[in-house]
Length: 338
Image (cartoon, rainbow, N blue to C red; front, side, top):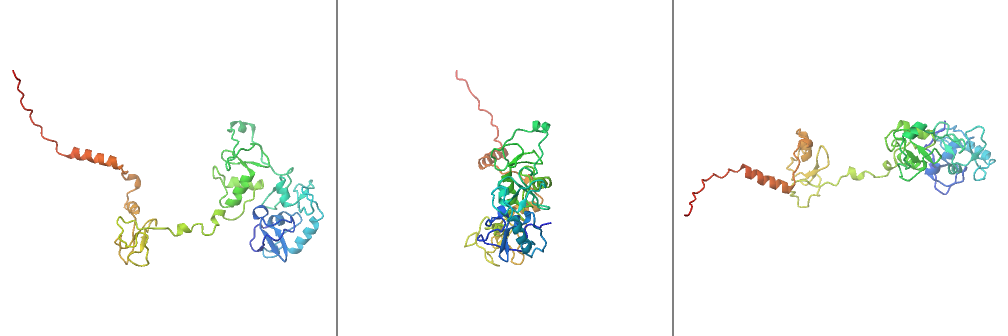
């Protein structure tokens, strides 16, 4: 079985061309462009070529495809015209044994061919590609008529076609195929799941079956260099009510009285050693929130803070209610003037 995505081979610059499709490097579309002994080829062109087998180890040839085998495959496919662009070199044949179509990888993608990125890496032309099953008539009646892709929120045609995909789980939502492909390429195997119900197993199995490429790597946002440096080095300041440091709350010296000591529980707040009156030998400090949690009081049990105006009004009312009521005096006698 071919092994996709090996990183042992040497990556190429964009000046080199693939020996099968004669295209430059475009990793998202063709896979990595790899080279050895002056021979260059896209990873997907190697995997889907009908007459090519992976006979070597990952460090031999081009990711296990031996150079001599690649040259033999090039000689074979140079006798075949692509069914779409009519240029020689159509190395990929339709997986249907009765179909005689052959094409370049890129031409197949542009003309509705399906590629299965697992197992034997088979390909099928648009006529013989694997399609999703139509919904039963009773289920179609019960579903709400939603004609919107839940990724891009653009309108789409809610019928089974090479450009639309029906979710196998949750609400049976519809998506553009291109939106799903972009999502899978970005999320990778470890983060690719249904956008609505977060289903993983059923979702990935169906997407692989209908030819969605899911790269076996971490998500693209996890691979950005230094993406989480700001979280590892928080910008802390002294949270003491009165900071007595002459250089200000942001001052942080090493092993001194103005060293910022982070809360040992949450690490979100800090205080100067001197401002927190901490011992030099045992610099342990808890912020007010963690102190309350450690002492057994939860935030839910705390009395919520009242607005200033309401607090002052309640204070006046309580002070007036707690004060000693004035003594009742007998009303003075009133005399009627005759």
